[in-house]
Structure formats: C-alpha cells, structure tokens
Picture 1 (cartoon, rainbow, N blue to C red):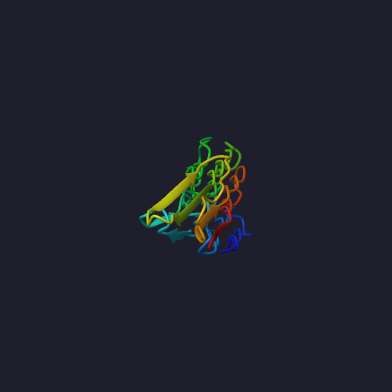
Picture 2 (tube, one colour; picture 1 turned 90 degrees about the vertical axis):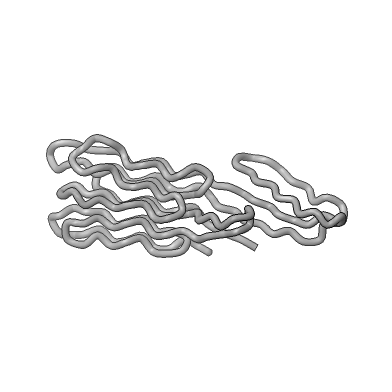
Length: 178
C-alpha cells in the first residue's frame, strides 16, 4: 500500500509534533501536551515468517515529557524531552521512519533520527519444485532462471528522516507487494 498520512501537530502552546504515517496506519495526532505516535506498518510472510515493516516515526515534544513512540515495523521513537539526544533511527531493512527530536524550550534542541533502509525480497518456484528466496539489502540485479513463470515480491523503500527539534516523526518508506 501507499503510505498513510502523518498526524497533525498541536497548534497550541504545548508544541508537540504528530507521528509519521506508516504503511498500515496514519500517524497519531498530537493532543495537548502529548506528541503523536508513529503509524503502524504492514506485515508480510514472504520471507518465511511474519515480519512487520514500514512503521512511522514518533513525534517530538518541546514543552513536556510525553514524546511519540515509533510505529510497529521499525519506526523510531522521538528523542527524550529536555535533552539534546536525537530521535531514534528507523530500523535498518524495514523502511521505518526516523523519530523526531524533542529538546526543551529555551534550553536545548535535538535532531531527528535517520530513516531505516529499505529491502527487496523475491520468492519463486524453480521447475524442479524448490522454492528460492532472494533478499536484497542494497543494490543488486536479478534475472529470472529458465522455466520460472511467476515471482512473489516485496519492495519496501527507505523511510524518511525525523524532523529537528519539535517536529513530526518521519513517514515510513513505501510498501509494495505482489
């Protein structure tokens, strides 16, 4: 599926950011003093077991301790309130969005976390009846072996980086399967 919407920031003086959208759910809204959580990703069993990928990053908070958590599927948590500690990076090979920085008004600022790298998985049956799975965690190429007529596939793009300071969590990478 395509990505889901990110959550809205709280426009009041609480200065909390919304969560980043995940592949399976929208990011959480910031409400009052609480930042929004990242939206959840989607699960796939193409690798042989159920793995959730493409979760959104958690929103930052500049006025209070309630920061957003990353969505299931590799989304990074927002950095802690009152600290220069950056938001967590999205988990590698999941396409999870990075968590936002939080900081504290007039005291400290913090960077957002980097987005998690993506992944490509191909699975097919060769004519002798054996199932083959290829997992690409970087660049690569593939040519279908002779006799292969159908391929199951999953492509998850890398997630976005979280916003600096009181921003929103980053959106997850795109999640496509067929």
